Amino acid sequence: MSGPDRVIVGLSGGVDSAVAASRLLEAGYRVEGLFMKNWEDDDDAEYCAAEADYEMAREVADCLEIPLHKANFAEDYRQRVFRHFLHEYEAGRTPNPDILCNREIKFRSFLEHARQLGAQWIATGHYARVRHLPDHSELCMAADANKDQTYFLHTLTQEQLRPALFPLGDIPKDQVRARARELGLPNHARKDSTGICFIGERRFRDFLAQYLRAPEGEMRTPEGQVVGHHQGLMFYTLGQRQGLGIGGIDGFPEAPWYVVDKDLGGNRLIVAQDPQHPLLMSPEIETEAAHWIHRPPEPGQPVMARLRHRQPLQPCRLESVDGDRLRVRFEAPQRATTPGQSAVFYDGDVCLGGGVIATRRTLASESEAPVPV
View 1: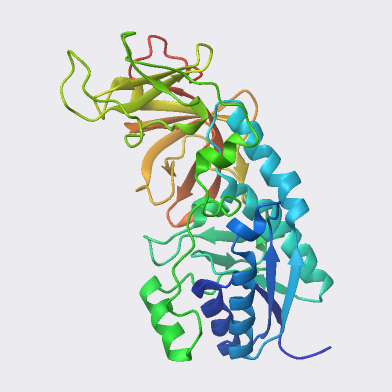
View 2 (view 1 turned 45 degrees about the vertical axis):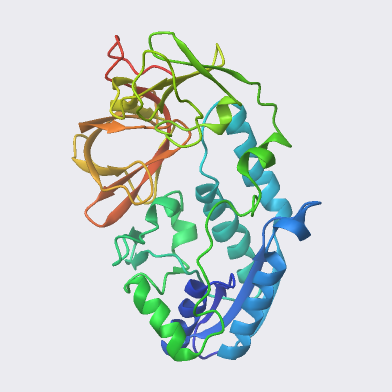
């Protein structure tokens, strides 16, 4: 069938994907929407907003006068994302399921389904840009640096990136809201979704406790003094200040406490009152096998790294270690580098790829080699 290219947009019910669809219409594409349901369980009706999201996506599609498809990828999500999520927490690490969801669901299951529907392109409301060159595609940072989401997209392959469009990559969020109001979209004032989709409005601890055993243990200072008890190491992250429940300890000032380390073998949470404690500061990390969107940087090439979403880019140098693993040396020590999270690398505005943080060396380490947390 000749005519404009057909693109299927992942319509979530949120304002970003709605405006993404409208911009593609304005650009002359034949646009259709697809709503993905990625989670369901026995508590779905109480905690998951999937049905409300679908109804909003349907209203948006009606407003834009485009067809809306619906697909259930819940089993794919449970097998490819959620099982890994649980395994990582069980191993004492802190995973980022959004990164895996993009690779396995939004740019694999969704892409396969869209192709079955006859689409040449897929699009999402991510804040990123893609530069399609003759022999490869580049993932580039969004114009709105505060909203840039390339950190969550760094594991995409060329096969996933080549048919992808990111219609919001060149505009700031406030313009997205303004455009939604101008178009009269029913979700123009809807709040952005936050948190992990399968947890919904539940407390994180309550949800995780349904799947994993979390034995309680001691909170100790780096010097070994017991100052409290934790509810399970998996519920705490490096650098965390809130929710520790420590106060009024004889011999210590009335100052905040921070998680600075985890003793997995002894089931102890290590805490201190110094937000820049040497145990929190890492001049060097090692990653698991790195993934490169196109090709790795040249040996010795300076690159920039981001260790969490919205963190300013950090100068660093990369060294190969044990195959595809990387040693990352930073110009300045980094705070709260967290195994299970990802280090993502950039050359200018181009996202090169990244790797999951495996180990970290801290300023408190006696050895030059990275040690497990």
